[in-house]
Image (cartoon, rainbow, N blue to C red; front, side, top):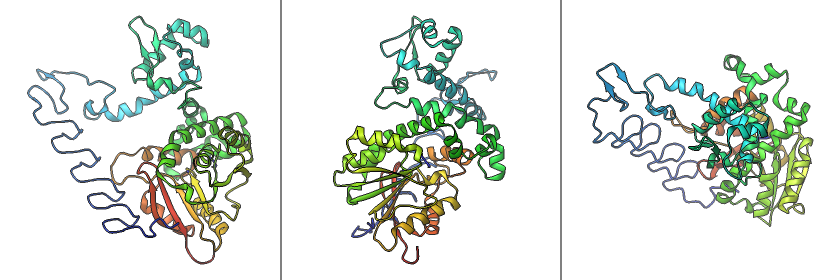
Length: 422
């Protein structure tokens, strides 16, 4: 999320595996079990089309989503927090109105309400006095957030933390506060006023709304850039353990993290693999955060920051080149340029490229990446990609996909350079 995440098949048994080295028997084309599941990956035996058990349900006097139908005149409204139980045609409205909840959570994070509740429940009037807010408006905002599980109203009208609200605290080990704030600020929100422009042209609305591409805008606004990097560090913190626990980065003595942002992920990688050393390449503005992360993690003797632009050049001489959550920010043409710069840096060496990015689930299967893909379109002009799209893109950049490591949700695309001129 910054300017911005060996041949894996050598000696690997391939009987019963697909072309990227995963077991394919009984799995779909991205390696998930498909037997006995419906088109959204839920077990379908004995379930209705919303994934609920239908066997043995009494349906007398109920409509097709299990709500009571009294004399044909009255239909009990389903709980609004359960879109699968909404009347036909209402789910689209439910989706459209979730912006109310998201903005409520944003403003509560901005006001540091979770930090104020760290010692126990407080009354809305007291919270309003501490935050400089209107007591009634703050109560209504808290009530909205509590209705979706973020904060809880007690019987005496005070509010307390829930597990979801705890991560809005600034000092929480899994804090998401900066990330939530980023999603509510203008750089994540205003461009959606022009989403129709993006859909009609394929170009990012951000450039149209703010008058410059997102990274140019960030460079011109240091306070926004700092928030962007802090939020990126929180994303890295959330996924780092999953990546580092499921893939052997220690197989590469030297690694260049291209577009490594805050340096938190690479610092943790170095911390976990004492035999590895390397650099983070990113915009000059990222130096302070990277060096701070390396110092906090105790890896300054093996990690360094290198200012640069991966569209222009990439340092030579590394055993592996890491692109984590980078390529989804850019168009196919821009990605091909980045990949060619990495390929040129590799030369005739046996270095490997490791791409840490999502691989979209096929068909109508639910996938968070399909939601994030819209943000890539509107904000960055980038995209999330399917396995077939990854193979085609890597080929354009001079690479061949040889395997997929890591976990299904956090895959590591293992790539080797195609022989020939870089």
